[in-house]
Image: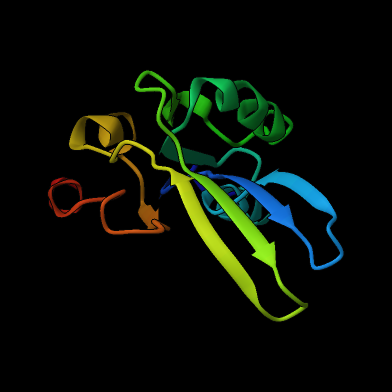
Length: 141
C-alpha cells in the first residue's frame, strides 16, 4: 500500500438548473463536484481529496450530503461564510444547442482558503472563469 496522497480541487460547485428541449427541469450540482467524485473513485480510500470552493449557505448542506458517502473526501474546504456561490441556468433549445446564463458568482478562492491543503501532491483547478481562482492564489500554491 502506498503512502496517503492528497489532491486539492479548486473551483466552483455551481447549482445548475437544467431545462431540456422537452421542458423537463433538473437541478444538480456540477463542475468541481464531478472532478472530486471521479478522484474519489480512482484514488485509495486512505487518500485525501480536498475540494476548495465557496458556496451559498443554502447549498452547503446538500453539497456536503452528496460528498459525505465518499470517505476520502475532506469537506473542510467547502465554505459558505460569504454566502456566494455559482448558480447556472442551462436552457436547451434542442439536443445540441443550449443557452447558458450564470446568475450567481462565488467569491474567489484566496490564498488563505488553500492553507489547510498546502501539503497536497497535486492541485487541480477547474474554474469557470479566471476570477474564481486568481493569479495570486496560483502564485501562493
